[in-house]
Amino acid sequence: MKILVTGGGGFLGSAICAQLAARGHAVRAFNRSAVARTDAVEQRRGDIADRDAVLAAAAGVDAIVHSAGKVGAWGPAQEYHDINVRGTDNVLAACARHGIRKLVFTSSPSAVQRGRDIEGADESLAYPAHFALVYAQTKALAEQRVLAANGADLATVALRPHFIWGPGDPNLLPRVLARARAGRLRLIGKADKRIDIVYVDDAAHAHVRALDKLDIGSPIAGKAYFISQGEPITHARLFAAWLAAAGLPPETRRIPTWLAHALAAALEGAYRTLGLRSEPPLTRFIVEEFSTSHWFDISAARRDLAYAPRVGFEEGMRRLTRHLAAKRG
Image (cartoon, rainbow, N blue to C red; front, side):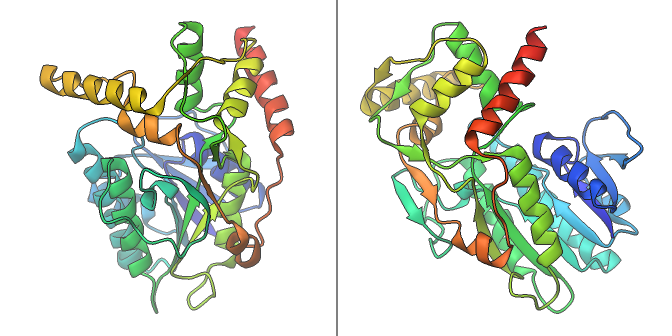
């Protein structure tokens, strides 16, 4: 097939492109920023919120993997809506315009999280009535649009990879390491809370498996699936491993959840009052993420997608350690 990967130059998107190209597919990456050209992947530059650019990039392809999106816990609501919702509408418009029959959407478990413990939930978990974070709200809206578009002319599926990590992570890992080096990293709340994680290559593999299984009228069409390594881990263990991979000591200092929430609310209020666009050092979403359990049952993905994690935590950490050592020179 000829496949368009939106966000194909990003952390997850580049891994998806590499795996699809390795399987012999013709791959076109659509990115906001220019990325290094390779023989294996055709590059197109444009903004996912620009309908004309998306329509042009999708011309002549058989399927789309829509992994472009704005992530984070802070920023103008309109930016999240433009990229995550309007961008998804543009991808759906491209499918209709060009008669594209397959769409795999990168969603997020944030679409169903509600600020409290989730332990072993499956895809029957409903969307929350209210969202504490505009990112989560826009991902839920985009997912709903994608699944609603499934029908006689287009097969859609949404994947919800949880806490993607690995070499090249531009999001959480650099922040954790920077705060640890500055002496500002703290653990939050109770020590027994666990979360799902998924190594970036496994998250990409799930997208490839979904594309293999997806077709109009297929059992996975119109459904959402949680994706993880299938082994929940405590925040403390994850951070200790990351810090060790960077040659740093483990963090043992811990603050109560109520205090973290109060600090985050105060910081958010101050940043809004001052009109600061940069992200506060602590937000209420980050507090929720790292003081609650949120792990999910991936039985459906194992059964319907034939998905199985291929990179265990220890192997992933070996790869991350080598990567960080090489960066240090």
